[in-house]
Image (cartoon, rainbow over all chains, first blue to last red; front, side, top):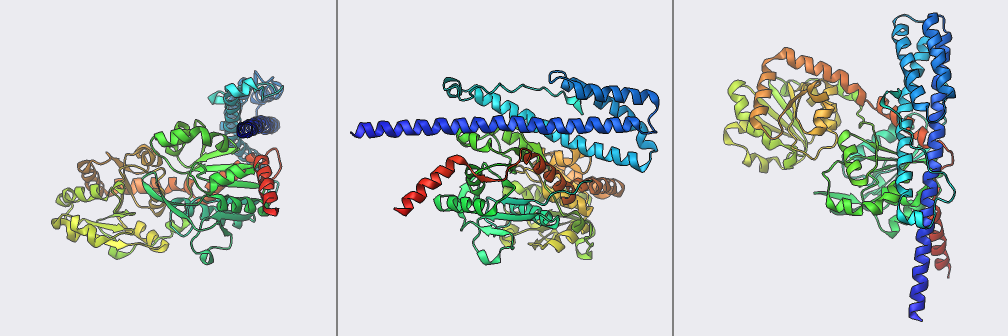
Length: 167
Length: 394
């Protein structure tokens, strides 16, 4: 009788641990999705600002063309090419920014200020997303998660290597 | 720009509110700033005297003094504290929780365990890799993981976090109320060829011993040198250990209030921080820089990084009194150099202004809240609470 009770207790503890672990993993998956949505949104906003800058009258036709192309490329890039496309946009923005800061109208100054704020945010967002992905992958590689298939049918999050020059 | 939504923010401070300390000061300043921006803030902290608390602080009970990491930490845990934490979370109906030092066995860890939703954690301490902390890593891991974003106050704190818990963090420095220090007024009794030291001088790691060892050597080159020591401690007892020849050059000022502190930093010709280790950030250096004092500090990692590897202040080899004496003497003789590092330091200290720092923290809050939903009790502790309540009813 006593053994039976002990057995039941252990069974419930294991059950609790499994449900605890499943909740934990679910939370991580959720974090990967939200952090990606956040990062994606910020990057889209950056591309939009880039387009606005490209259409401002200060931008000469050549840099305007370059910036427009880079912005569209960043917007349309697939997830695999995203990092590369975003650093292309950073490069184009960097070129233009040097020229624009010299003499520009308040409207453009405002855009540039917004851009630098956005850049800081993107930096944090990248750190959060990369961390979420790494944690999720680390947890999913543990034995108990594999044996009991706690991840269910959720796809393994993509390790998205942002190169250092993305910004 | 769009107007930011006003938030309900819950902050948890793990250490006793009545005892002065870096984390408590940080939490207090942050809460003041957030309130001034129109957000509603509630701080949960252990407290001895519940009547002397600022209106935004909620007491979770009396702290327990335990030896931790080579010092006495006033923390709070246990079933009663845990139920108070849960109660606070339910009643607060917060949009976001900001937990300080969640890896310390205290309220923040309990809150992290009890809550679900947008949570941000700030790690203040830095320490060498310790087996004890390493051993509890697997227990802490699933809890710390619930934090949407982790903030470290310095590179040193971030490295500690990476080593102990294998997780990364964003570095946002500690804040100072810069204008308070820039407004300091030089007082004649503290001016002249004076070097300032501030801190609990009885603790060996604060390094006053190194400074006093260097003082006779400095006196040979700068005859009218005086060392002013501010901070709490038994100065009579300490004076006995000071070499008789230099006793008349050392003055103990006791504990200074905030205004005196600003004046003190403004008055001294040099501010010296000879700490031998155990520092994670070095907020006093930021304050000295804001007041416009030229800073000399030991080259421990936290200080070297804060002083831009020697750009915003002079560095000397830690625990090397001869090296310190030479650095002090050279600086005291060269007013141009002194003014230069003081000016660069004062300019640089603006990155530690609360306005700048809190903006960074707030942008982290915004990112932690993506995905919506406020703070609620975690599902696993919810069923636990139900179970306990049912038992209570019987």
